[in-house]
Image 1 (cartoon, rainbow, N blue to C red):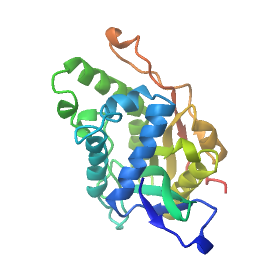
Image 2: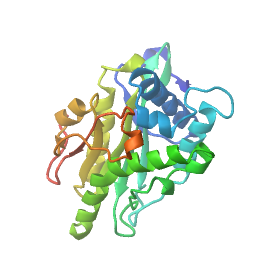
Image 3: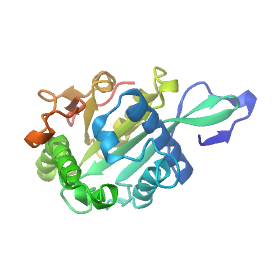
Image 4: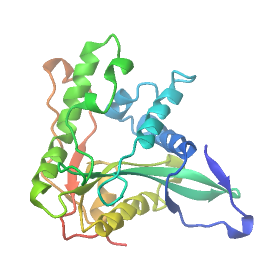
Length: 259
């Protein structure tokens, strides 16, 4: 677990939210994701996209964490110098040290060059499926279908922003808290940071695909569910598989998260 020393007399009770600036914290954040999505909620989509999450050695969790570190290293910037993707860490004081207890990934998305990352419904543009499943064409096909369904509304809304000013939105790609530190307000602080940043960047709308566990937090901070849970369009052979419930949620351009 990544940590940094804290003087006993200066230990903070409140979680501290900061932009990640070193790979060790990405790895610690990924460990939080393994504990939450892998061990706690058994999120079938996340586990399928990170099949090494519960394996040891260089070809196990280390390799999966390295992919996230690589994503962090490849951050791009908009025409105002803002990072298009922000990796946040939440740290708490634990026995005189600060430990990473949660992580969030916020992304500024846009179809207009210079205003954010351009989203895609093609999973292969973001993930090397051939490396993950070199001899399993069915698994690659399934993940592409699931991902396309998951992000369909996200891509549509970004497209709708083309005529807005600025033509962008802030999307919460991931928000995770180590189960040992849940129910301490950490998720709310990670989300609120992004909402405040969206306001700073010109009053951008915020969106996310919310799990059953997280949607009550987002609703409390100003997000509203749009329609029913996301419907996954997959081939008949994949219908018996478990898939997590996700709901597309958005704030609206005039909304701002509540403290």
